Length: 270
Image (cartoon, rainbow, N blue to C red; front, side, top):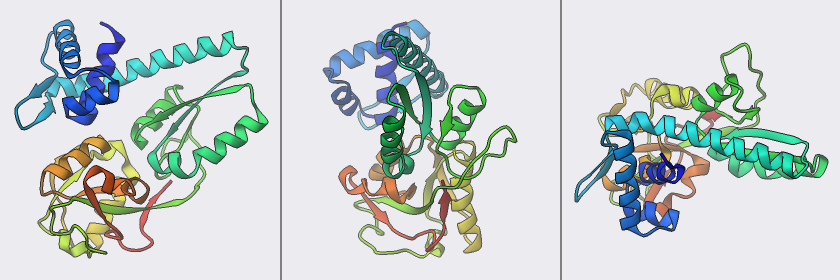
């Protein structure tokens, strides 16, 4: 099984669109399709189901996706460790981060680290909170930027900022273009959420705000990948949730952000 097949599969899984995945990988679309077919032959099961109107992962594909990510992460770390030794670097710090940290914290922090310890190499891994915390406990990460406080006594934490949470909707949604939407209007509206284990603090902030407003969320589907959430929101009359930092990119993705749906001052701590 070749790593390039795994990278192609993960691009398809994230984009849920063969054209965008091929562009991202600088491949012709037929070549991408061939790589997926060879990977599926190696694995022995169908991983991606494609129809004229939809690309989605099979149940086997969803299971394979997490393990493929983990395998490529290990391979990248092995390459980084070898290069660090060859270049005479002092060591490598593996850093996990979420989107707000990547926008607002890491650039200045990494610049300061490089100034003080120029021979230390850093490896960055963007993941949701749950996978980051599991990677910390497994020794795969040295530091993580996550939402909320870790519950394990083996991990320490420090609060850096509070991140507002907003709604994201497609350009054709009735909420598109509105300045604000009260939480009570979520009643009986189909929403996309993610599994709590992926980001407990953010999940609890969303569900807790709905509870305080007397609203029971109607979860149409659980989607763990933020990119896939954006794709589905543009294609369906559903409501997604995102940090304000990520939602800044919404217009470029055919999405509209609806600020302060969670209420002013409420958000996920990072």
